[in-house]
Length: 268
Length: 234
Image (cartoon, rainbow over all chains, first blue to last red; front, side, top):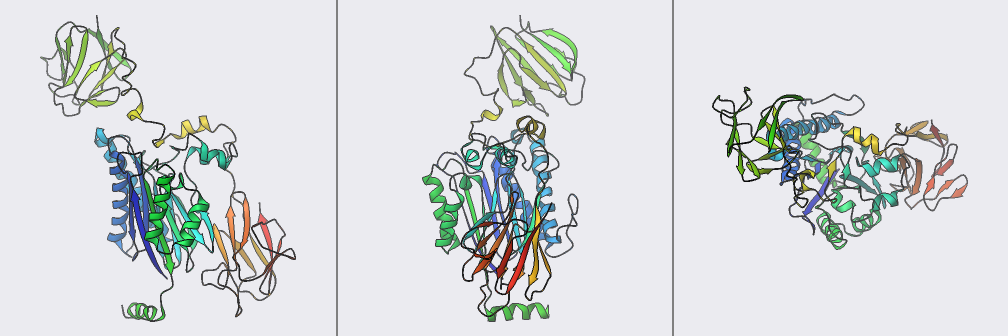
């Protein structure tokens, strides 16, 4: 299985600067979205640091025995643990930077990261950036937002409709870089051919509902074009926040290419 | 007359009247307010008086001067302001109240309601008063009642599981005309549900399935020669 991906980010219509960052790598199957926060452009720094550190963790170690930040969770695979570990490392780095430089104090970021390894998918997230899976015409959110309204929905205090209108949507219950320790939510799944993964910041999910996202992704095959269409729709609905979208589609490797890849693996 | 209260953490050390045009603060002995602490620079900061107005000015100190938690270079002082120099606090006492429109130093980072912020777990508890217990997620799956399959029981742990012929399917179907994805089973906090993906007829409790169906304990699912019974563990 191979992955074909694209990403786009946009300032939106209200904000002065873009505090979102993303990273995509089709070869190692790594896809990341981070939504920074904090005054004086420090949000940009937090999200950029986080994305860079996670990327470097995967570039550096490759398939070697990974370093470990925080506990190794036996319930999850090595790939998932590496993802979690890299996020915890990024958390420490952002937290230390905000403590050392007063102008960066209080900065933080959300993170939504997935890694595709063969047909296994590792998912890790903190905050309200989301991961969706679109399969066979259905859309499912794979991550639970760490936001106050989502906690209220979980406890049946308010309904999903009330949540989408709430004026407390911007309050997060978890974020990276706020403390020296962070709880990272992890999950694993089996992927199939023609699955679509969509990662986004709340600039998209707050402006465009799930069903509309689904219809766009189902009608536009090209990931880059679909990203652009979704950003245009978020802006048409107000564009209140920075918008970042990553779309990754799994595809079958054609017969000859499959042979070639496996041949190379055999001789390695 | 304005004064400053020199404090170390909570302990008050002394009260100092601001009589002079310039009151200097630092570790060296020639300062008006002399603080013997290594976190304080030799000549750390000074308080300037212009008629009834007082200003705090940092003198290029190593660790910086903070007013109400914000690093400053020069700023006017008002009643209730707290100046942090090293580990010592200087509380500014005067009659002059900060004008209301100058909200900058009161609201955290001058936020609007649209900006994202994080709250601590303690504050979350205050807001999320009701039922602060962990909601257990349901765990369920299918027993195979009839038909040839690779397992007798399928426990469905993932958020979405596929029933079909495809490689990654949780419940793999055989047969020549079987679609790759015949149905999807979603696992959510509120329970499981099954959605047909088209191509092949699925029966739930003997009836054709055309749209999403919320699975209940004991439901019978029939699909391409397999008869499955849904179960849920508490």
